[in-house]
Image (cartoon, rainbow, N blue to C red):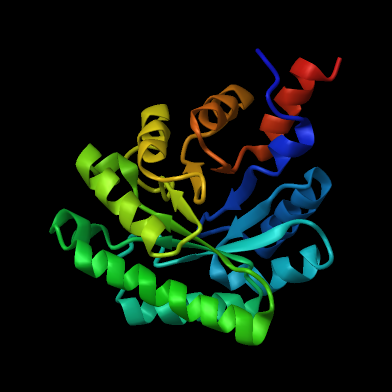
Length: 236
């Protein structure tokens, strides 16, 4: 296998993820310790653990990412705005928001664009006024249940609405990310927006293939294994 990234660069594509609803505070502590050790891009956790993670990761290069409208996306826009603001107030550096999937299936793309714009505008305004830091906003589209045309249309909306990333999956859907999902998204969006692949990424070979296809961030619970496999291949 050809090495296209250094180990440090690979680590910075990884959002080490723990969104299990029965995760404990001890689990979150270990997640953060491992993320610090490996210099991952972020930990991705449920909102109840933001403050704990922020304390552990204070003054490190690991960001705290939490979720909005998770995992179904069917909350009202007002609820998502509250969640997004509350997450940032508690210390989140990044937000992974689930899109309203029913609106997509209804063909109501005006609703989708309006919702994303409202959330992006609220967070952008407050990040400047109160937090003095950029908040990455990733929009989860659940590629496994969308047609190719739906993926294309919604990705165009996400980019022009000012979000930072398209994210493929919640991890709770019928299946995880596939290479064709990343390739299709990259056909639509420019390099000004990131693409986060998630769902079923367990090995270095999975990670490398998705990065080669155009992913710039990986949501996975297997980040440690991915780094270990990289080392076993290249650190000889």
